[in-house]
Image (cartoon, rainbow, N blue to C red):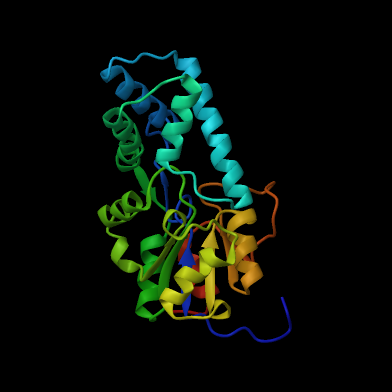
Length: 250
């Protein structure tokens, strides 16, 4: 940190997964397995049978492709891209209707997986909003599209608390790219130095926020990626109730 005084925080942006919400522990199969199962059932419903181990290997290859694009920030890898890659690995030729059903399966899984809200989030959000702090979301989207993520927040009663959004499948940018943050910050009408960012990832959330001069806060309640490459945040918390006091609010 430099010796110069940091401007008062006027806005806070949040990562989505494992910062605002997470898949509910003990809710059954993880999201990846649910996606595989949905894919297999959709194929079977169309009279197409594939070996489970082959389908798992195709999903592994698909996730490797997503992660390569994510790490290198070389473009999004959408459910449509995923279906194309997986079908190719399996040697399948899909008619348009079956292709559309397979693509929609990723949305269906995203809407069905049980979610849990991060500890202290509702209280922190209420305190920040009462202090007229703008709130935004900066999310690296995986295979659950942003409209589904918005609907899930709405169902949890959280969507209306946020004033600006930056979902990578809409902006084309993953964190830590400057553009990923600036979309939300411009929507909030604040400079990076006037904002804090809360997220669980060092390589993405912390690195991007620090590079922009934002206050960086790493959230560890769901996952603590301590071995992950990247800088540590200015603060580390495991309960959002600590946020307002850290930021001098309330």
